[in-house]
Amino acid sequence: MMVLKMWKFNDIYVYESINKHICGKWKQNMKGKKMSVSTGMFADERYKEIRRLLAENGSVTVSELMERFHISIETVRRDLMALERQKELKRVHGGAIRLTEMKQFKQVSLRKHENFEEKNNLTHAGVNLVQEGDIISIDSGSTAVLFAKALKGKFNKLTVITHSLDVFRELEQEGQYKKILVGGEYLESESSFCGELAIQFLDEIHVEKAFICPSAVSLEGGVQDFITELVPVQKSFVRHASKVYVMADSSKIEKTALMKICDLSVCDVVITDDKLDERIKEHYFQAKVKIMKAGEVYEKTSEEG
Image (cartoon, rainbow, N blue to C red; front, side):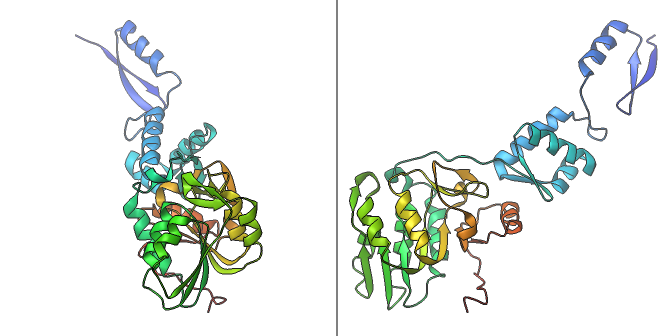
């Protein structure tokens, strides 16, 4: 007949066999580990699940983790603090978001086919920010080309300034639009013009709205891109615009790139697709950065009329 005795571990009562060798080994393995009373899940197991949720969704909430693990709010907060100390997440109000990571750079020929649906949706949302008779500047890249395509036939009068040959060609047959192609040194890999001549030209103009299409956007790093030759042109677009709109699909949000274009504080709206996690949008809202997802109606401020 086996004899059992009871002992206490982390506020859990455990029945122990009289077999000292087996139970002694088990207690030794348990040493230093913390276990959830309700689920029997150790902290390391919860950390692993939190990492998985962040990788999939980009964010987690305290209430979500409380319900998933059946643990107290204090335990969730300790878990998030531990992972933040390990530099695996960033705690925010009501939960946490994953840390920014470097966006992988791809040539424009490959980017044209990447996240096509998301880019197409957000560019149509961007068209809603353009008004009849506007003077706008359009960046280069796959998103910019789709934006130009979405503008076709929408207005009777529009002035478009761009350094992208692909954007220019997309609008070439729009006879009612005034099109200005910024010259300079031609960067064949991006089908765009750059260099000192391009900057000198842009220094002489001013547009009502600039539409910037970067490689990455994050609260910490701002608006960023990989193409070192084009970043000065993008910076010039920002400097010489009354309104700055950033167009970036959700895969670029909370990512970083090589060079900074500008802070998010100088941008009026970040336009993205409808797949962006609402919790990340809320985090941006708390940081006073306005995000408009595809399908949402842009609410103008009193200054915009």
